[in-house]
Length: 254
Length: 277
Image 1: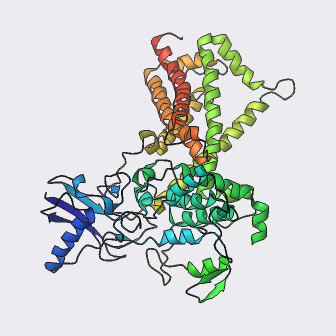
Image 2 (image 1 turned 180 degrees about the horizontal axis):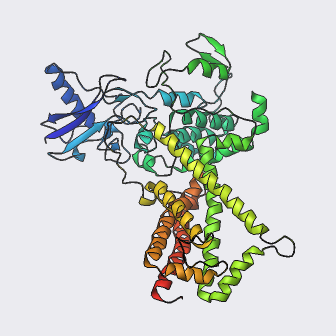
Image 3 (image 1 turned 90 degrees about the vertical axis):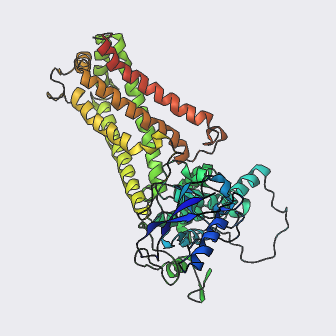
């Protein structure tokens, strides 16, 4: 099939961006979306043009590196799939496809379709860990965890940090990412010691980069791991507890 | 204790945060690679409620709690209005009775004034938190130049919250001028205390009746997304109120909206059809 791509080109973080059109003939429907872009880039390099910059790494939907907004939808039309898992059979001959980077003030565009997602690292650095400073790894079943709790924590831990939730949100809010990172620790016994301090620190760090939640639910539609917005409710609840209940202890921590 | 790579030393968490997040001009990359913050981070205070209100998640709590108070008000208001169908004496007696609430114990009009002041505070908080969250979201929204986001997934009510809120607030001013303040250019036949006659006089003008119906439909759209969102903002994790498989949550939102809006829009329609009057 033959496609027309309208791709966002931007030389650098401070440069003005614009859309440019590229004709892509001979697209096989077995190709992955990124293979199709690789093919286009090879041709651009042969023609002596600047290839299109985009992020990718594992190409099997587990690393969270890739991410293109395809026709206004982060990771394209397929539910529960990252850009790398999208195949060209999702499109048909003659389609005009618009490719954009994630759009959010917290994700500055570095080049073309590539954005800087350091803000996510900053949120995780604020509390997305448990402090076990010493000792050997504990035995596997030493701490009992009920199966439903383990399942819920696992659902949250499925977050690959790709940023599609922010890109999908009209408020550029990162509630789904932050709540998933919080929930996978806050639900488990190991995460309890730092639970409320973690919630407070991560939420407040998140708010310096991203917007607030208006319960649209675009994020859970865009999420390649189909993480539900239930975790946002859990985050909201823990945040209130952190502010009210944990106050006396928080004062001592300095 | 955290090991800070750039500084090649161990330090406590606050200092580590200071060392790893330095200020850069907007959009630039610093030596540590961290992009500059988009929103200002409020200083923590010793008052937990003030502290809570400074953050976006806290403002959503305030929005939800004031929303519940306002839902209580619109429901009680609708319920009182139903006396319109019982006739002039009952409605006028009810309106006069509101002023003597808590009668033998409290002075006249005290309860009604306390409720009015409370409502004003609740309205102010609801609107202020909505305004400041909207401003925060504008700042956080990405640089322009791109196409519009695909907005099919969210329902109409969620997308129009700000507009329905503005419509309801504007309608509220008209409504107060119509029946409470009795401004002559809004309701020329206004008479203090004659609630039933005032309502009939106002609603017999077709343009006003249409305006009331439209405003109440806007209120309904606002109430629908609001009463759905409360569970999320207040952190309900009950499986019955799960937003994905949400029979009760969506059902509650629909039932509450219908319970308030249907009687409310029936009043101007009943006057127009001559059932009341």
